[in-house]
Image 1: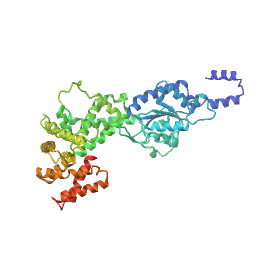
Image 2: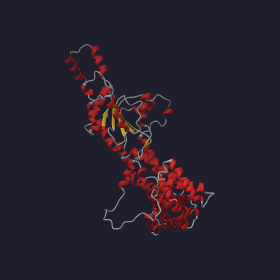
Image 3: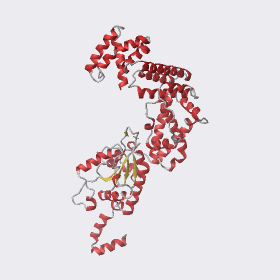
Image 4: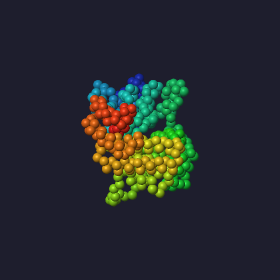
Length: 502
């Protein structure tokens, strides 16, 4: 370096020692060293590989923080050699005297606003913003997860940069971010207390090293091997399923496992695909399967696949096996016959109970809107679920109750086919039979008399005027059979039909 420097000085005709010192003061800086061509290329290659392996699979986005505006442009050119150009975007403040290599990345206010807006949206480009000062303060994008930090920072500026990636985030696609990731290329975090000149107590929990997370993951896996995996050890198939479902019937025990698994899953998402995880993968997969089984059995209203974070979901997909598809031979409609078949299956009673509860829930979800009489059946099934979980019912008692509910469902389906009543009128008839104990013929006769009011005021659920008129007509019909309870009865019936429409 010294030899080349004196050669350049001689060529430029610079001999004055003071001028030489001024040149050295301006040129020999950390900032310039960070912009070394080979170094920029190496960092950009690492960022591209790391982003594709760790960040992109989670569905999140990243900042690359460069030392100055020129460095931002250098990183953009280097990243484009490893990632499609549309993946990254430079955001810098334009200067009047910028050289062409920097000017080419200037954005108008409208362009910058569009980039900022697109960055906040999942699954849209750009996925990496290359910045130096802009957006490090005041810009809120919770989907930002990773910050590749190649700029010395201190105190409040550094704290604000940390805050940018630490925004919690959750969306309908199953992404759930509880913390951010900073990859430090300049050694800022070697001494955090020096970089952040605050009380050490204020810094607790601000930043944790990945080694700390690896230790936490190992501790969590040790707990899983000790407390949870032995539940189904030595059992296979339905016997293993029964053991898990029985062990976690207690709601507090189940909630405790859910909380444990969520923390385990979040740490796994941050670390994956680190080779450190390899010795744990088989047991982690078993814990994933246990969590999936419990959520599908005890919380059928929660879409199971969405309850997993991205990298854990890949494990589910990878280890889900199926036979090659074949031409369909028979068609089975979800209904009473299919549910009754579940009661005859060669499975433990506990497994039968949860299979029936799950299928009843699916049936009511699928057909409740067109068949409101199913709503009370679904509500009764949910009450049985809670009683069973709280051990107010044994497996045999719950199974007997559910079989009775399925037979009631079958009777309702057969009767509905025999009548020509509308869905609202049949719901009234079935409600009178099941809730009020009316004889079948009387219930059907009264239901036939409410056909016309429901037909006349089809939009009663969204029109208060039509609802008033419908109530008036229902009062007239029901007052003849139960004058004291007419208002309460109409309220109950309309509440049932509203629940079907939700």
